[in-house]
Length: 539
Image 1 (spheres, one colour):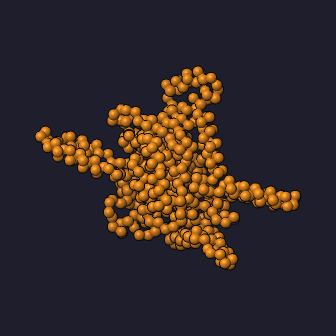
Image 2 (cartoon, helix red, strand yellow):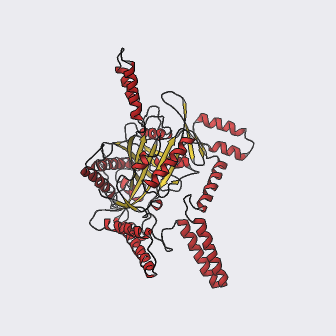
Image 3 (cartoon, helix red, strand yellow):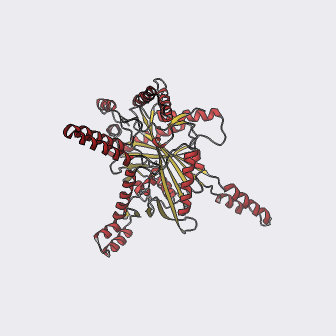
């Protein structure tokens, strides 16, 4: 089975050597300027000030298994600000709730307390901030319209897929599945494509044995042997213990760029043109998913997307249960703790109130041990993280081959320079440098002209869920163990102090990715390309 190098390619080699964080690079660059100009105007005291400030910046931004000191300070400040503002709680907006909050705020003894009470009532949960619908019609694919604060607006559509493989498959079938998914991603690279990437979601749940039990009740003979009935119940319990079922979703993302507006104008005026264009795009993406052997492909309606979001907040709800769901009611009441968010919902079977806790971690290439991996390197995260529900989401954005090739070439040159420098000094080459060099060379080989391969900007998120704090803590510890031993992930970055917003990264709405920054040459070529030629409107 083909393997690929993963890890290290997200943070390219810096001027200071190795792979540095952005905050560390900015800080060290500033210290370099302080030392340079300080020495010019004040002599050696300025140089000393630059060196000392560089040491301080390095210590503040040095990465540890708990993050850097600077990151911890930012988390503490963020948490205090959220508690002060009242945004650590969420109450879904309605007229009755707003009136109740207003009456409660009128009894507040201070303006700050009043503001906290009112801030908790919001129309959207933090994970879906700025989300609306371009098309929420019944029976039609739901087209979500996103305008998160500080981000480029975009549209998203979710598809339910049955998956590529079923049980034990042949080596040939597995290789075809791997190649098919790679071809799917490569198809998004051309500049003419409006879809910028896809989000793959795998939802892992304990099996629901209710249908089996219902079948027994319907077919059980009146004179059935009690021992046989108990035996069948034992079989069901043993079958469901430590086993899981998976559901797969794919989400496409369409940024609202000048190219999108110009193309939509050829289909019609205003939002009607957008919907006609998106109908063609949804059909095209569905064909691509089928060509990638992802099984049965079905675009989800707006209510089905919201139903899945509600299920992920309250796993007691069955997935995609649209009964009683409104497309504009996306969230359940919640409260945030430092390292988790707690959702209050209702069990649809018993009607009893239930509480679920969730915690989300980010998986990035810079926090992974660089090495070769098979397509199944993530299975341990899905099935070895303890009991309960969990969701694994990867967001993949294709980077055109010429840009990815340039970055890989720079990494090869700098890694080779590091190796040669150490050899000249008679030093042993750092194993990390060796594996980074092998990874960069492998990426360069994959991106050779004629291969049809392109680069990818990716980030992963995993959300674990449990009914109690103890269960959530145990699941987090087991997940970290699996990540380190089986998946080769050096560190899971828990998105603490804003876990309610972090939950949205594993919902079928494509949240949490930072688009790849194109090179200066690529930006210039985009400007020269303009908005395309004038064409007749599509009938």
